[in-house]
Structure formats: C-alpha cells, structure tokens
Image 1 (cartoon, rainbow, N blue to C red):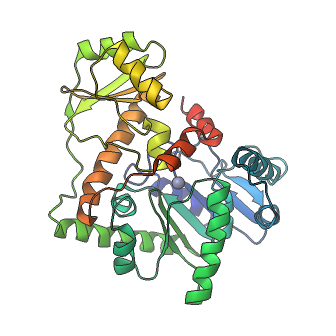
Image 2 (image 1 turned 45 degrees about the vertical axis):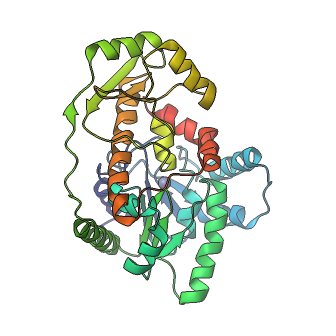
Image 3 (image 1 turned 120 degrees about the horizontal axis):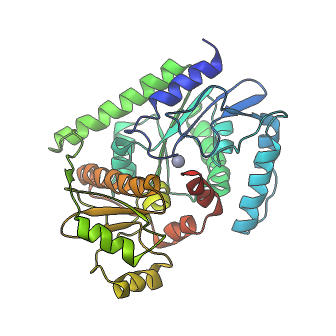
Length: 352
Ligand SMILES: [Zn+2]
C-alpha cells in the first residue's frame, strides 16, 4: 500500500474517540527527505490522504539545531514561521506544532494520541513508577510545556535514551499529556498500541475498575440552560448538557484546558458568581456543574459539545488514575502557559 494511504488508515483508526477528542493528536510518515504530517485544524478521524502536509526534513532539523530566543512568545513565533517555511512548494496547511517531535522519532510512522486509558497512567500520582514496571522498554517524559520547549527537551531525552539503551525509543509516554508510538510499519504501530492498551486495561480490572464507558444520563435543566445563556450572552450562546459523571477539579492535560478550561464552575448561577470566577481566572467558564447536570458552554454547538466531551474524558482519566495512586493535576504554572498560548488558540479557532 502507498505510504500516505497507510498513514490515512492509521489516522482513522487512532482518530477514534477513545484515542483523541476534537482536533487533538497527530500522525506522520517520512521518506528520506520529507515528513508528511497532519495539519492543524483537521481531525485524525476525517483526514484524507491529500490533506497531509509535506515538510522538508532538513529545515526542521536545522531549526532544532539552532539557538532560539529564550523568550517564550518570540520562540513560538520563530518556530511557527520555520515550520511554515519548511512546507514544500505547492502545498498549503499549517503543520502541527508537534511536527518537530515527529521528525525526531526514528520510526517511519508516528502516531501521537491522548487515550483515556493511557492518560489514566500519565495523569496519575504513581505514573512514572507504573510506567517503569509495565513498560520497561518505553521512555517516560516528565511534563514539559508543549511547543518548542517540548521539542528541544525531547531531543535531549531521546538522545539520552539511545545512549543508555543502545536503541531508539519507539514508545514514549508524556506526563499529563499522552503517548507517541513510532515504528517502521503501520502494523508495528498497531501492535505496540494494542499491547499498551491491554496491559493498562488489565491493571484497571485488577483494581476493580470497569472498562466500560461511563454511562451518562440525559441531564441539565432547560431552565438552567436558559439561565446560563442569559448570564453569558455570546460566550454561552450554545450549551450542551448531560449528568452522571464526576468532573475533574483541575487541569489534566493541555487538551483539557484548550477545550474545557482548567477549572469547572460550581457556584450559584448568578452574574456575581460568574464574574467572581472570571476575576480569579481571567475568563468565563467553559464547563458549569450544578446539582442537575454538567453544562458545556460555547460560542457554537461544536465548541459547547467539545467542552462537555473533554470534561467527560477528564472524568474517565480521573477514574482510571485512581488505580495508580489518584489523579495528578497540572501545576498552575503549566496550566497558565497553555491558557496564554497562541498556537492552541489558533487550533480552537479552527473548531467551527
Ligand atoms: Zn498532544
């Protein structure tokens, strides 16, 4: 099969809801001189073989090897421009901000996702220890801000790993983020991922957790929906709601922040309460929890539904993490970095 068709197949499989939500995750395949990667703003589930953006590998390598400004904003701008410049002539599309990471991994195919089952480990108190026990051949990476910082620090981690184990890392777990799997054939990628999922599922079962998706119930009251909409015109012009799950009390991964913000709102449904939340966090909530239900808020139905979907994903992650010492939230500093991140705002703007 043609490489891009193979990559499209992988993208559709790992674009399933149990692996990624919204526009999250990315995939790539490389030839000697070109890296074909998923562009920002498309979803893995719906990507077509003609959507992948070809990047000149040498230009990414040069960028990774050069000295770049220490100032976060400037750095991301430089990287963004370098990535755009590496797009081969005749093609358009903005390469994922994680593109340089794909370049760093040795395998021909790379799949990066944020599965609930995996994040049950990466977002848990004992994540590192459990990872070493269950996946001794994998690489564990402590939390790093996404974007250029992640790329440059991963470069170091990967070379340290190679020096110590005399081989390239093919499975990489990122604390409070997700997983990268890289291999020379699409089937190897599938096998590695299946093995990880089944080992983790076995641990959850041992801890007495059910592997079934939590059953949510229809929830939320028409009156509360109308009240939220009237209190936050524009911001909450659309609302989606269900009930029957525990919303996490803090930020779990960058994607959770991008789509549903770091903290849910649990106070009374009043203007004063919501303004107080805004004064504290700098924005109005994307997720509101009341006795009757959980509400996802958004300027479009897609955004409202995604906010709710990520809150549900966080709930599953939190439940799985209970098998490994409980959930570990991102630090305030790490959460703030995401909240202020232009690249992610761009991605969110792509969600119609
Ligand atoms: Zn990611």
